[in-house]
Length: 464
Image (cartoon, rainbow, N blue to C red; front, side):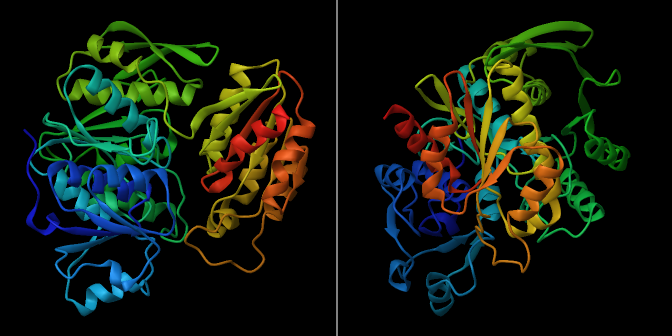
């Protein structure tokens, strides 16, 4: 039986309750019996899913949304200091709790697996959640994306395992005390919070240092940043380190990845024995995510062959190369990729899955700071497509930076030989793409912002 509700979480109010991370915590608390309330900027399927669990969800932010008897106000790093509900909490002397502290409190008393890395976290966490559920272990989990419909990013299970996506962007992953931690990769990102790779390494070292005594770090043996992290934490006492990857030195060695259309067959060598299983999403990076999940489950004592079979039941997560539909012989696929490494991986996966098709990309840069630092690399990644449309930067939580626009990406893409066009009016994209696409083509909408909304609109134009 999972633990109950921490006293501070009996009547929580979430500012931004519809967000991927916030809604998951709210859902788990509602399942445990808490009186959950909150607000979000707009109506959504996630808000409806929370209401179905008994939560009160307000649309818009106003001081009056915060009940006087709330036991705490939960915020993420994206909530600004002048939010009226946050100001009201100060007037009422209601404790303000960061999202990561709320999540950490829900893990107490459970065997936690925390999945970290610059990219791949959502997919790997989802793979573990699906596989452990398939094995009847009834885990709790909190994921940064929906497995299927809105509200499927988290659940309260009756088992003793809690799988959580651990966010490094604001150092919040340092709050967790996992029994098993996965580090998929370590790269420079989140430039508003990290000034250098040394700061990134320091942050990940702190995260690894929070693994409980006798616990396990599962870490890539191939990615250079992960290899350097392993070198830095090698001497930590009472820490078991399990490496995975294609390196000959890996403890769980990837022997072969065989593409099979939109799936892959993966063979690993574990404890001197070959083990083959299916990954139902394309691309070698997703195959590596599955191997990381396999290694983590084995570290918890789950038989490898059972876990491998269960991993084959994973069929993807919303916005991770998600097929949105097909019209006029054109498939439209959605990708959350917004970092150059992710972009390259997804574009290569699409190339491998349909090598005879043209690949058309609609890319929306995410954050001014990321574009300023990595715009050149983003443009170079787009050279893998046959043609690309690049939208204006999606600001999310950031204010504009003078001189930083999508032009940085477009210029780099053209310098790399890419066929790329700037489109400033997002509403013009569906018609433009429908005019470009021919039967057999693949269209990939890519980015962490609202570019995902364009997929259905493109399909509508293709059908007309």
